[in-house]
Image (cartoon, rainbow, N blue to C red):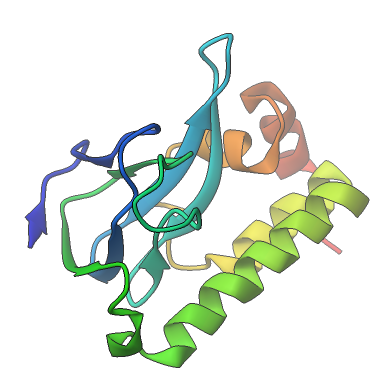
Length: 150
């Protein structure tokens, strides 16, 4: 299925039934807090899987949309056996590393980890989205980018 840039595939609160496999393009998942601020959870470039991990047919917690024009395969939950195991493992590894980085790392370390995890999307994602993903302000991201790399 072809998805246009900006198209919302899933809204928080909708019935959670879909799994998206990115053939080309770029998706993101995010939440919006009570103050209306977006917090990016994960990016999904080519060959990654994007889904809300809540149980099938329950209200999802994440919004999912396209950052770029994309082509995705859409599977109904319950048919996960069709997904290549490596794609699932990539997503789980990225999630685990992200949680650990948010708990234990400086903003510079989180930024360096972002570059390592998503080397092919750094130029494809607006700086405000990278800052949201890192849990810092765009201004703090500018300062971090100006620091020398390890």
